[in-house]
Amino acid sequence: MADIENVIVIGSGPAGYTAALYTSRANLTPLVIEGFAWGGLLQQTTDVENYPGYPEGVMGPEMMQDFRNQAERFGTRFVTDQATKVELASEPGGIHRVWVGDDEHRARAVILAMGAEHKKLGVPGEEELAGRGVSYCATCDAAFFRDRETVIVGGGDSAMEEAIFLSKFASKVTIVHRREEFRASKIMFERARGIDNIELKTPYVVQSFESADGGALGIARLEQVETGAVEDLPAAGAFIAIGHEPQSEIVAGQVALDPEGYIVTEGKSTRTDRPGVFAAGDVVDHTYRQAVTAAGSGCQAALDAEWYLRDTPEVPTPEGMPEGDLATAQWAAPAKP
Ligand code: NAP
Image (cartoon, rainbow, N blue to C red; front, top):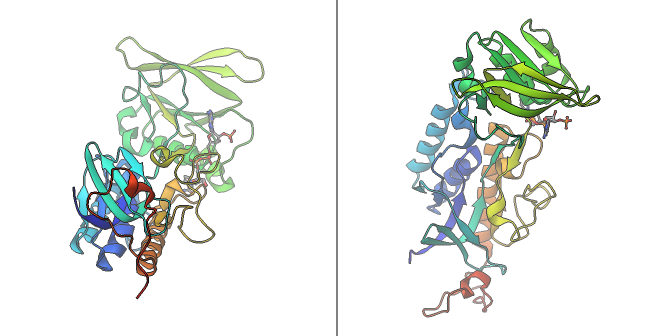
């Protein structure tokens, strides 16, 4: 079994890599379990124009490569695979265990930075036609729909942003929203509404996505919410922008989650309700969800972890200790010198 790490970071968006950068500069040689598609949602983004320090903008994947390189420069190590199971210790100084398949990793502190994923509508055809017309990222896929009719589902800022971007490629963009009122900020809403080839369709929900002859998306079947009338809207592309879901399943039942599944942290800190376990980025953040705010909270998590390791006596890990005891670590910690 591998040595006990100081810190394991799970996740690799701006939060995870910033946590790795700070903990590696503190000589804690963190291990990042970064997933297959490392880099998080920014890997699916094109131009990032609002990250300070890049006056000309930067492509999302390039920015994440920079983040990763910077963390690596100070001794961060990476496992490019998914964490599959976690057992978090409940006592201060206890050892946390994280599995990647059959490989077990142990650490005194864990930083949870698993991010968020696009929410699904859960209607027939959505899964089957994903990648064949149904998409969750206009910035990634808009160019495939040049001069085609498209649909955006959602009424928040993401939907407006996606619609504005898509309108530069598609012949028509119909924003389908389930209410008359839009959650989007006024400025984004007005900007989208002012574009000639963007239309608003409310209050409608998507009933299903139907394929055309060639097997790709052809129709978004809509239902008028008040009358129940069903209407087919021709669409070669449908972009779902109805919010995000925190990727917290792996720690469900071990750290406190709010009703929407976001990890709960204590006050202004990144501390969860487990000693030695910290959380940062979109898996915590309902509200801001920006690369720069995620990076900031990754920095906070690293500092919280560093202070925890400094102030918490190590629990001894005697040879021959039975499997499972590490998870609860209920033996006496040595007295502080
Ligand atoms: P959001 O604000 O939560 O909006 C989600 C939208 O999807 C809402 O209009 C919601 O409808 C709708 N929706 C949710 N579930 C649905 C379902 N099952 N079926 C149909 N519609 C559904 O999410 P977001 O737009 O991703 O924005 C999240 C945060 O990021 C916000 O704070 C936003 O301001 C920020 N953001 C900012 C920018 C920017 O400033 N450039 C860009 C993107 C995002 P209801 O309104 O009826 O609930």
